[in-house]
Amino acid sequence: MFSYAVSIDLLESACLIRFKAGSTALFQWAFILILFTQPVRAFPVPAGRDVRISWNNSLRCNRAVRMQKRDPLIASNAAYDQGDALFDRYAAISSRLDLLSEFDLSYRERYGLRVTGAAWYDTAYGTHGRDNPAALGAGAAPSSYVDGRFTPYVRHYYKGPWGELLDAFVFGSFDAGQTVWSVKAGRHALVWGESLFGSAHAVSYSQAPSDGLKALASPGASAKETALPLNQVSLQTQLSPELSVAAQLGFEWRPNRIAEGGTFFGAGDGVNEGPDVNRLSPVKGGSGDAGLGLYLRPAWLDGMLGFYVRRFDDKGGWLAQAAGGGLTRAVYARDIGLVGVTLSKLIGGASVGAEFSHRSGDPLVSDAAASAGAAGGYKGARGDTWHGLLNAVKSFGPGPLSDTSVLSAEVAWSGLRRVTHEPQLYRARGYLASCDTSSNLRGCADKEFMSLALSFVPTWLQVYPGVDLDMPLFFSRNFGNAPSNGGGSDGFTAYKAGFTAKAYARHQFDLAYTGYWQKIGKAPDSVFGSRVLGAPYKDKGWLSFTYQFAF
Image 1 (cartoon, helix red, strand yellow):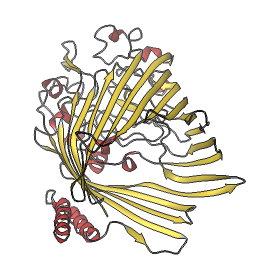
Image 2: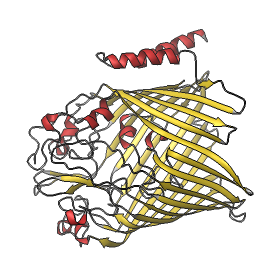
Image 3: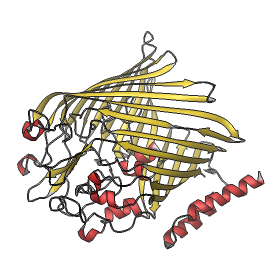
Image 4: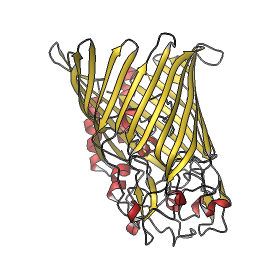
């Protein structure tokens, strides 16, 4: 045990000071965190019999490297060249330190509060971006940053050191007759429904803004870090053994946090919050998201039915709406309606979930070269859409290849019912003239869309005393261009394979390779010389090593 403790302490310290020298702030962090992490796993605070206080922390050290050379069709396209030029093959795309701190207080387990925060620092990112001087179409898509210098927004969320408050809410349970009402008030995140992989076609769409930036920049980030909380009030109660109710009322709006233009995983050099060349301030959503959920557990079903009604503002947005004079801005649709039904049930030893929903006023894939103009709030096309998904999770016991394993699968579907607003902007055959030829590679919407996601995780227990080993495998693929804005691009494929070692319930080591495939083609009729369907990730395969520990 002595040798284990010494080696782990050395590893923790190495993680903290592994990153490039030259930052006084980073070494101050390292010194403070080393002091805190030596002997403890959590920090229970002494309190009275009725009061429980805990302070838990986790530190994550990540190193990621680009493994592919540049694809000329991406690197020479001025709409994507800056993100592609930023890091060479085998260069570190992330050398990042993340801290998550969680404070919980409860009184008699009925009342309390929760406050969480995150901080980060990444030495892979500097203060300036890069571009390809020979990229085609530079006149139409110039450098996204004045003098090539990242704006404060980008520097804060990529390089750091920076931090933010996440959860900050109070909660209580109150008796009302024979029922107990559980209420939360303050900043917290809600995700309803049965989706396994956060599908854009779930009943939880735009319920909580997501931090996609951190999910990509910091492998191993948990849902507690990537589901961004909102100021809201939520409640839940069990009215009878068969019926329960959940509700939410929001007082804050925040957009999804996506990879910024000119960064490695940027979906396009000109978006979103970071770029300051030819960009105007966004047309934001508003507060007031509201939702109601009813849950039925009839004995005959041996499962649960959920019924949902929601009204919300979009968190994804049209990210590059034309605003005249060569300027663009992000625009977020308001007052989207959703009604949906879900089912969860055990079937043949598998946990099965299903959803079916309808959206009214759903933002649709729209023409990037036009918008509804100032009079129309620069919006794109909107319409009514159908969405559904079906998933299953099955656990397996000891087998010839592993001690245990878990297989998860999800199929999602969406379809267009009708276009209700700005049909001339809807990017689809029969609506937009440019979609009459090469419609697929232009991103023109199909009437229907499907996606498939698979996850398989075999586990080997006690490969070394106190150490379990997983081998997480993941694959997803889209079929068709979704009618809904941000709903998915035809053929886009993501895959991931790696190993995860969990040691002594406190330490975790992850080694993984993530790769992508997508449709790309030459386009002699375009000033950019090529067309890329979806985010330009085909040449961005990357290898990551992550070490995280709790204290």
